[in-house]
Image: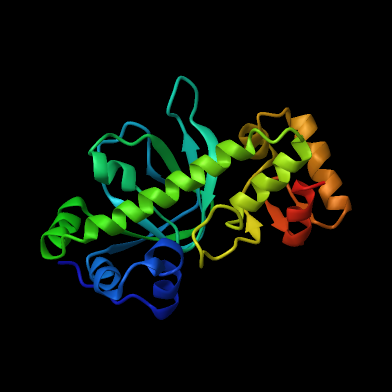
Length: 233
């Protein structure tokens, strides 16, 4: 068993979202078995096709989830910030990785090795229930993202996307919102399937309304309530 001195700040972050919806009898034992790493910007947490089944959690920073489930990709799909956990699909199925996960800034990540998790399930068979909860939350997030892509108005689709990326739409209750997103115009255009020119025009419109601000590699959410209103215009 791996015993860690988790700081209070990092533990509070890790207990947001999914893990905060599980009982202490599970989440405390899981964190006891985790290992901690500090990762620099641009670090690949894992790549498509990698044969590992490690469960990961974000204590600090942001990671990009790049999708490559069919013929194309990897293409930008989502952002995970503090409190997010991922890797459940491969942990459950034993399949190779279907996503590429890459840090977009300096991160503190926690992970539990496969054999440590299975030892936990031997001690507490209900542990699989909580992994199923995580998988269900990710399924709901993916279904919500697919539903948002069918919104007719591209302006409304952009607003929905920014709310999802900032953990304000589709995220588990208690997830920490992300006000400063490490995403570029190229990332947004990929996620919306719009040209960079059209994406830039729409982002500038939101900036003129003081709903967001942005630079080449970041988007700042200034008025999330106004973004919600954009969906219904």
